[in-house]
Structure formats: C-alpha cells, structure tokens
Length: 333
Image (tube, rainbow, N blue to C red; front, top):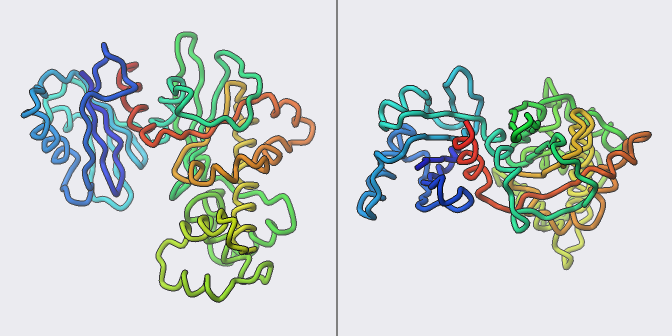
C-alpha cells in the first residue's frame, strides 16, 4: 500500500493506493483544510483515524509520497502561506511509514504525465510524438509552475524547474508597453508576473491604465475591493453575451504569452514527446484555447516553426493529477 498526498496552502488531498490494483484510482481518499492543522503529520493521523473504521490498517502502508507546493531541499520542505515545516525522516518516524519522500508539486504533476489516460487530457495539437522524447509541463495557476521529463531507458523521470521566474520577453508593441508598465512596479518582471493567476490582473491593469482598452463602469464596480479579480476577468472574457474588450484582450494576451513560453520550454529541451498544460487556468479557458490562437502563437518560432508543429500539445483536465503523480513517483522510486 502507498500513501500519496497533494499538499497545498489551502487544502491537503490524501489517498491510499494499492500498487497491485493500479494507481489511477485510489482505494480511499479524503480532503482536509490545511490551515486547520498544525502539521502534515496531524492531517495524516486524522486521515488514518477516519479510515480505520472502514477496515484499513495504516501499518500496511510501506511508502509515503507527498507533492508539496514549495521548494524541496535535502528532504525538507515548506509551503507558501502555511507555517508547516516538513521533514522526510520525521514524517516517517511519526507516521510509522518505512519510507517517505517529498517532491515539488510540479514534479508531482509531471510524474503523472506518462500515465494519463485519453479522458485526462484534451489535445490542442496532435503533432507527431516521438517515443521516449522529452516532455514539458507548464502550469499556470496562482503562480506559474514548470517541469520537464526525460527518458532514462526504462521509464520517464520528472525534473523540477523554476522556469516560471525567468525574464519575461515581450514580442510586440503591446507587450513592450506591458513590460515597461510592470517595471515601475516590480524589480524583476518574470513570466509568472504575466502568465498566471497573479499575472492576469497585471495585464488587465496595464490595458486600463495605459488607455489601450476602456474599463466599463459596471465591471469596475464588480471588481472594487476584490482580492482576486482573475475569475471575473476570465468569466467575462469567455461570456459571448457580454461585449467586454478589456477582458477579451486580457485573455488573448495571456494566451499568446502562455503559448510562447510553452514554445520556449519546448525548444529548450526539444520536447518531441509532448507539451502538457497543467494548473488551474488552462481547463477553465479551454473554450478559448480550442479556437486556435494558442497553437498559432506556440508554433511561431521563425525557422523552427515546422519543428514546433510536430510537437503534441495537450491540456491536462484531471483535477487530481498532482495526487496521482505523487503516487506514481512513490511507486517508481
């Protein structure tokens, strides 16, 4: 038996998997509000108490694997917006699990990619996948996560990356203005500043403040006092019944930047095995991604346009991909 977890600042998803029965579907699963607990150990111990009455013996668990929304170094990890400090050795001792491993959440998502089933993805570009070819994962959610996979001769290995914090490179006049606008607000303008949940309001504010697009009074009233305006901006942009140029342009700009950074990643590691869009935003804007703008921008790499056209591009639809990835990683280690 294997215990897997997707550990975030808001919620913690835990599940028990049977290696013999397959890892795509857990045999037991529960979600906990992370902020209500003092530690990951406390969450797991409560989970154990919940599943004991169902006839499950936690001592049968031989390995624990946890994807963590934060950096993992020397077997230790912390989570943004949560005071937990996680340590592999301490977790193993407290939970009486012989082996425990922590991994970055994007590494966890990437670990699931080779095992995704047809219903877990939507294909934007079929391409011509090369067996054993490198693959990349780019995941715009609250922030921008990136990871990649390489073939070691037997199976794929996932590798964490902090590529979302590389310098944003504009490619047209609007984006040059966006970069200059954000340089007055931040010491460093990364792709995460323009290609994530925190990036969408940055694009919107630039369009409004620069006069590139007008903010309707009804929308301004809706956004007043909101800590996170991203959901309303996206919903308004996708609503065919609402004519809102500023939201539409915001989403189009976001898609262009996401496509080009996905293309950058694909070129960096020659992702002939495929490009996978993860995170919370791509499934929410799937209707817009289907319209072709993303693929056109993804392919636009000058002399390498033809090569990029052969790289498959998929949107990950399975909301439990990080949990599944933690399980697959735990099985393969």
